[in-house]
Length: 471
Image (cartoon, rainbow, N blue to C red; front, side):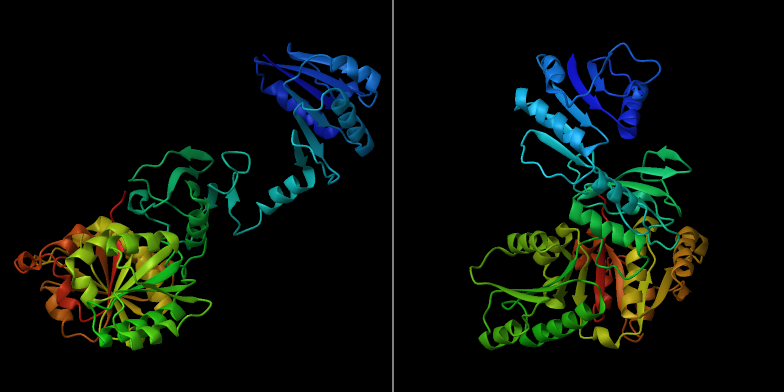
């Protein structure tokens, strides 16, 4: 049985006692001291013991303090009375745990005191009602923002998406509120406008997720991360390829919302080119060089974690290497393969429709990147048998997003292999799901009609590979 002493006075104390009486806890025993008995509940629970006297009177209070209390609460409306009661307690119980309701911003130097600042609590609660402000749980868990509640607006990239298609790395959707009812999430549950999502995860990651949910477009590379990472291997790439990657990564950094551009150089062999790269160092561009010959897998994974990378950029020579490709696939981050076609000269973004689930996963990224780079969107629906109804669901999904974001989109339906058609098109950015198919041997891909396996036939264009595997 926990014994609790409450020194009570005022309207807050009255509501506190009412709350205790309504949520009866049989394992607690409450001793209440008050000047005004009207703050007590009409029907007192059996575990309430009430005394009527002034707690600033040391002689009277000291008699009660002869008993051992597990917790002492001081909730009073008058500052002098509250401080007097606190001092009386400390005279007899210097190490007792006290919870003090502080309306006057009093500062205490007391390791055994829990100082509840009423003004701060009210200000925080009012702040929660401002639009576009994340509501975090302050009295649950660590109270550091690892539990968050987010209202999904109509124009969000998360609207009309199934929960199972949302990659949740270092965060999770653990609940969904719709129509004042809690719905436990499952992969097939679709998010709708005005749903409230309950999220749990790393506070810094949840901040990015909140922005991605609330602020329609223009947040990529969020929620994958914050910064852009250009990886250069001087032993495998030509100086021409490296210069091209640097030029395009710098342009990309200016156009999309990545906070910093991190340039990692491995195997430094060209001193003159290295000096050129180091000259780019500034407050939002950081060049780091590996002189120790660390294994690329370890190096890249450590960098991605350390710098909160949301987008990895590399040259075609690097991405063609099967070992590097496996490393990038394991990161679960978007990877942009730079080509000879400059990003700054592109006019359109192309998506070849394939499996519905992966197409839904990459849809938000498609519209976000197209918006930030000011590219037109073109969808290619490839059906050799002419049955274009097969992908009607995913087409409707993209059309909904097109209307939500007021972004024009062109749909091309082809019976012939779209890769043959696209080879002759002007340069474009291709966005495609980063699945295990990308890792397969190219020799066997030549005998397949799967457009994802044949991605390399369009690699003269820059290609953005978006992770879709749900952990």
